[in-house]
Image 1 (cartoon, one colour):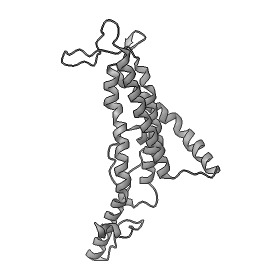
Image 2: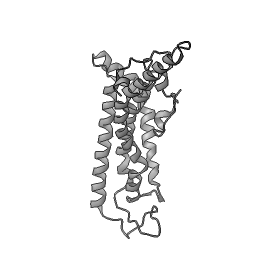
Image 3: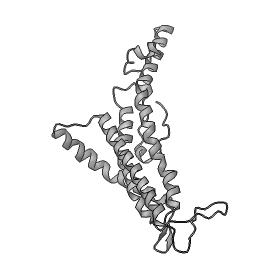
Image 4: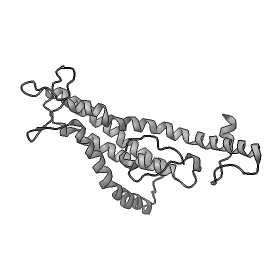
Amino acid sequence: LAVVVGAPPSPPGGGGSSSGGGGGGAAAATAAAADVVRVLPIAATLVMFWCVYSQMSTNFVIQGCQMDLNVLGTTLSPATLNVFDSVVIMLLIPVVDGGVYPLLARLGMPMTMLGKIGVGFCFAAASMVAAGVVEIARIQAGPLPGNATSPCSEDGLPLPMSSLSIWWQTPQYMLIGLGEIFTAITSYTMGRASETAPHTRSPPPPLTPLLPPYPTGTS
């Protein structure tokens, strides 16, 4: 590991010399491994962000199942509120990229990539706080009149619905969307940076910020 960490960064062209034989190939492999090791601290930190992101399809849905799902005479699916995450991303990416970042740069406070990731983590943390506040309010609100059972109940077991409306979950979804704008998009940009070794880059699908953080492969 010491040899790998101490190896010089690989050149932008990627692989080793075509005429250098085995020695060139070994040097290229060592440099490639060093490039991967250098991005591991950031990658490990981002795992925490994606753990928060995954709550939208797990615990947020479970929480929503136990809230008042009645909307205009119909029963709303708790997963529907995921749309607020996507709406925030689509509406605010142009604002952040075209307004916030340039304004901060003109004020002499340009945001670094790590700074953007840190801001995204703050929004993710705020989302967890909002979800906790909603959960406390849900428990204290009491069940719906008539002890209505949630459509999410399984195996015939009753799942009472709280009288607190599911719309109170909206802020926690929107805050995660804001976190994605700063953390997720910046991490993808970092992976495509020109100084990054070609073998550590990921392809930049246009809608990646709207998709789950599945591995995108290597070039």
